[in-house]
Length: 302
Image (cartoon, rainbow, N blue to C red; front, side, top):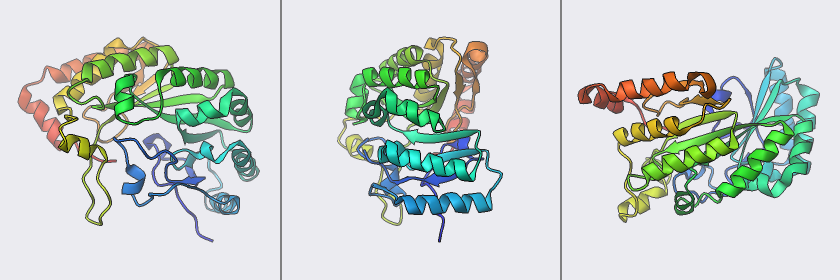
């Protein structure tokens, strides 16, 4: 019996126990992503319950003090509510976690509906990480995200009603140099509407093919064909400034909590927005040489 870990996890879940419910991504069409094939998991599948239960028991043996649990891969709730309820029930038999968190897609939750989400919440699901990416419909269509603003608003309202925390990801640079202002503006408007609990900032990374033959970021083709122009480092910071400026001082934690962000700012929007915005503007006021040094020493990673 060997333990199988999720392919990736959010940085904020570094203390959590990790439980793989599904393998890969059931959508796997986003132009900006392709992460699971790149990391050696090209196909989507739902793990057999027996394997999942074995991993839960292994985790209980190795880490009996687990307080939080994270479920992967990209969209565990795509396994279906019945499967998820059995997984959550087994977790509760082995642990007493204060929080159970999962990756998910807005489209999957939209299909589940509020009743099934409420059932999962009662069974212990307490936080969901989802890729909002952008509020600009044209960007979402071009990037083949498979969701729209109406879907996002509906699902966000359901999660609030079910008392499940919503943690969303915003991807700076997703509109390229062509639509960066529209990207920042429409994303801020959507975030102001849905009022998530967490807003986590990421920077678009168009990664190359790996030496082992793993494929490059799918967006590479559009760049080669002249259909997309990557945002500059400075443009990425300008996007961050505009986004932050347009966000309401809501009760949400705003954070650039990934190593590929040029600025690592964090704070509550309702109390720290002014200070965070000033930090961005202070950086932009630095001499060009200093700004470029920051850009050059900031690594790009998945």
